[in-house]
Image (tube, rainbow, N blue to C red; front, side, top):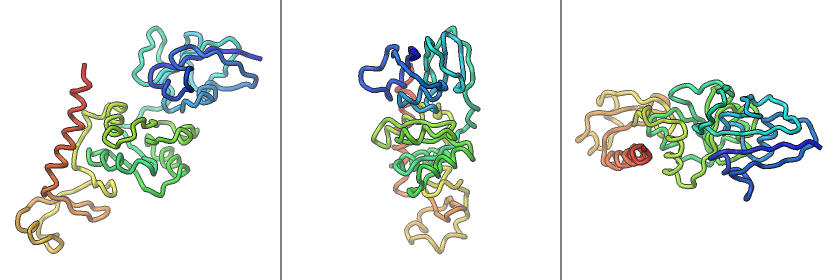
Length: 252
């Protein structure tokens, strides 16, 4: 029987069984395995991993684990001085594209409000999410570890928080999105890009008071939803301020 030592750093400890975090784990195994499969045997999804070192040397997910190996597994942003960088996956486009599983509808809505391309439908199953992520090079946002372990998913993040506002802040921080925020540029209903429209072309669709007091309008060419700076705009501004304030609160 072969034996290895494996250590997970920082946020990757969130996935480990109690008592296994923040220390090297001595693990016995019999079957030949890639380091990717070994990592995921500890319930750590591969999209959460940014860098891997074996015996002080950077490796990729295809490395075959050997008896006596000492494996270190790092999340994004974790310093691993002395170990050369080895890219595990292609870079995400900037700004990144997202696909959100069916349990995170409010998160999808908030991300769209902030201007991010975020696909979501409440009838997406895991297979649909994984296929979309692979074909369109989108990052998966989910609270389902098994979904993130699907081989065809390259980028993804397991959302820790339960509350949608906290979930949004998590995603903004994890993907360094603060400088890319463009609020009120996407339809919160369907994800379409909003465009300006003349008042005359939509006047027949407006309520009397809206028609009387507002002159600037946006429309979604995908679902035909109309947006304007109504009484709800202050609430939206306060919400946006909450997310943006988080940047200053988390700054050193």
